[in-house]
Image (cartoon, rainbow, N blue to C red; front, side):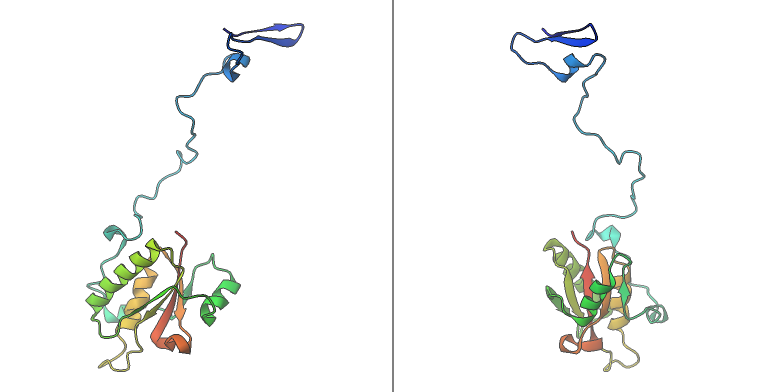
Length: 183
């Protein structure tokens, strides 16, 4: 048994018979916690609307998108967390490309399915830079169909930090570099 007492302003500790003294024995009034972890995020509000990447709930439905809505997007987008130096490396295609997807010949529905599978696969392997080949739309009856669809889809992916047109050796304006968040 361990006992503590104060004599002449000095803490006197008598050790247990096994020679060990615990912190609780040294400091009177200390209670032992039931667990050894403190949840510092307990008071924060959890974002329940956003689910994990790859889950069906996190992917919007693109089946009823109007064509005019698709044409309003810009050719490139960079998340605010990306530095100018990183943006330049992505734009110039100097980063190593981890994988690519060719959507030539796909319908809009097939393209969305392929894009979802491709992104899930890339995220599971920890890829950073991808190329999506969507074509320029020169063989379409009207304007390009897949390019604006891909850009719209990229804008709605929480795991995508940036995208921009590829360099000529990677497909030029018929392809896009896609930069992903770290897992």
